[in-house]
Image 1 (tube, rainbow, N blue to C red):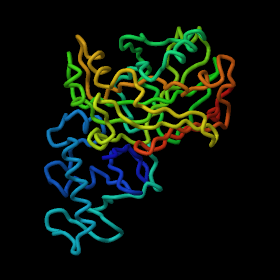
Image 2: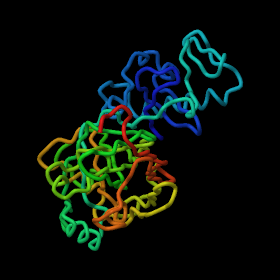
Image 3: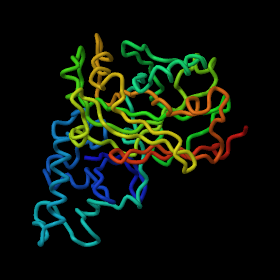
Length: 337
């Protein structure tokens, strides 16, 4: 499944859904197709991943998708006595549309509320690590997993404007993230894959000033999206060591500037999770980030003198299996610089 968080056409609060072609199944609206008992259940993404409600789970979401698909393919409308279903104006229960076109909603970060961001450095080769270290920036340990925390309160979604910082130049960072789907601690690498709810694209924005980057590591912003692909949908792309075999592309202003194959990852996500969970608890909604891919930032491409991102630039990270994470760059209107 491709899980999304979105703001409906009429506005209001963020809702959770499943992408189906060029439409989105609204999980809360379609829940009565599965059970009347979960109509008023919390259907935000953290509840869906964490299982805080016994009937709000990824398995239930899959059942809802199947029910909607079956309904769309049926020849007769379903029994109206239990769900007040109406065929008027599309698939509707009461006043709630079960499916909405993607073009009519605003996608936000698949996880609008992130519990934590742990950023590793597993997508870097020795040459790139040496370049970043010489420029004065953090690199992880070459032999063992190592991570730093990033600010989890400044999260951007697809197509959301990323503000240029006033303190220093801004750089992008092409990365991949996995989302923790169940609580656990002291997890072995052999068991860790079971804790992954899904994967998403990550743009790890970075201030390009070595001193500021050391004093305030990774607290500018992180972009996530456009959707969260559940782990079972990517099982075909895993090698014998558990690494995903995907190709990520970085485009700036429509021009490809870098690509990275995730099979080159130095540690698998299972190994990263096992390290992160030693002597501590991992909770649903935490994100494990691969780290910026070799060649996945302007520092790698141009060196420590830039050029860096400018007003009206557009940065895109894309992967056929994970979608396209587009980020316009600019100044926020109304700010006095």
